[in-house]
Amino acid sequence: MLQSIDAGQLDLLIGSWLFERAHRDTDGLLVIALDGKVLRGAWTADNGQVTLFSAMIHGTGVTVAQIRVPDGTNEITQVDTLLAGVPVGTSERVIVTLDAAHTQRDTAEHLRAERGFDYVMTVKGNQPTLQENVFAACLPLLATAPGHVVEERAHGRITRWSTWTTDATGIEFPHAAQLGCIRRDVLGLDGIAISKEFALIITSSPAEHTSPADLHTHVRQHWGIENKSHYVRDTTWREDHHQAWVGNGPQTMAALRNLATGLFRLNGLHKIKEATEAICRDRNRALPLLAT
Image (cartoon, rainbow, N blue to C red):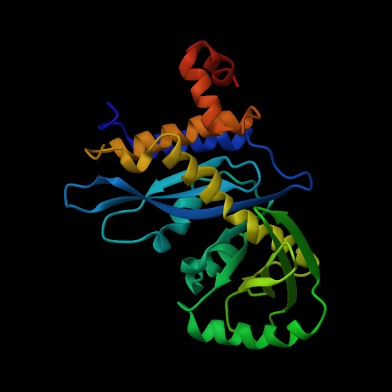
């Protein structure tokens, strides 16, 4: 049954159900991260790996949409298909965060012009001209005080993020409104510098809607899709070691894992491994979650 079921329809039903129950930010802003995941233990009949593309709400860590990337293509071409399954109201303000692979003109045009969503994209070497122009616009900012600074002390080191923003005047990219530069400094507890990294950001959200602090939050929380979704599926349920590959089996199992993770998080259970072990010891403990 798991191999023959319409996994795409199952994903759509599960995602819509979770979306209706997932919490939104108090100001009505919905921020969604998009990212792909290769199921390393699953192979198609053509000896190709199975790739899934999913959307997760920032903060809550609930996956609200997932599709299988068709063989012979990649996730870059599937943004519109994925977001078509997210039932966002026309009055809601939505920001979509994406990694550098998705920093594409067609994607930006679709998000802003066709869906009315703002985007936050990382700019890297896959777009060399854009990277050069954004870097040139941001370079003078580094001689000024950053618009936002946050510092954390953990794991025997100090990490400091400094964020600068400026308008996107002169940048040839669809609907670009702001540029950002985030510098990540890692220092020892004695204050001696260990490393320094820069991230260049482009967004369609104007300054009156997205401050330097907001931009920093969106960029950092984007990687929650790796920590709260992909990492959990790999470490708790050993997804990459699962050998299911026939038919729709891989996508069906991934959809069920997303449902389980979403149920945990909607019920305030964020230690997924411990919660799973507790239910394994007594399956009746799952009943309150299923009645969500």
